[in-house]
Image 1 (cartoon, rainbow, N blue to C red):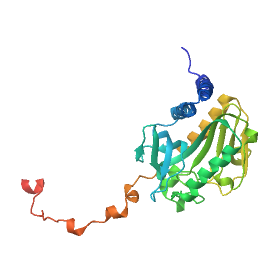
Image 2: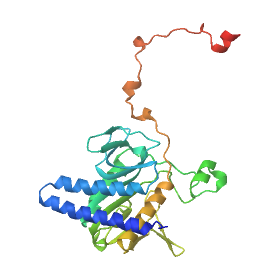
Image 3: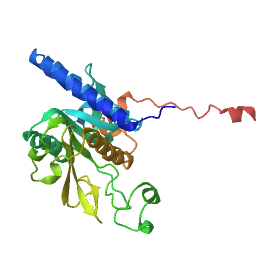
Image 4: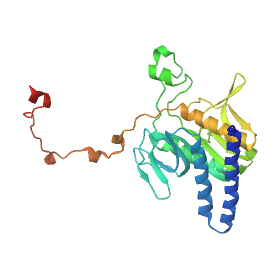
Length: 289
């Protein structure tokens, strides 16, 4: 019996992505620029979705908060579909989701240019510091189990500061990793970069001789980056491993619509209220007696 090869499956995906890029370049030459970009983005989103648990959905779109702020457009938004509703979906698949559900955001580039990391940093800054984003603290962080909520002790690691930290990344097909820009403030630059045919870059720290990936929400200071120059299949596998690991350690709180409803809606006009007394109506148990 033939055995399943994960490496072959990964390489098939890579070949499909590279062929889509070649096709998109041909479409681009025919001046249909929008169509060439959409096809690649749709393909990459669908391939990432294949490796994620069913509770996580991968879409494109914008994010909203309870103050009405709207984020920039993101090529990839990964959110917990079981805990949060979508508010609106347009015909082209663009969705608007409440900020509480979002666990990862990403950009897709056919070829990564040096300027792209700074451009994405502006979107990350807006998401983190302009929008009304509520991070949920892990009570187990930095404490003993005695002083923490037992549910947090069972669900999270002691070095995880928040239950819903944000993971940001750029997924590019081609480009040169060494030419990507790193700058300050470092916490608004993308956590990770994958250039499928060149390599990966990850934020993190070297602990006991091993690299530990970090997201900026959890880190007091990001001390190291790791440039990994692997084969395309290695690059994709490492990226997926870090993404899945991040999602598996996160938890989204149950969603409440009340924060999004205008206060005007929640104010009742007393002149429109009629109270009726039904205290005389019996329950089934009372009728049986």
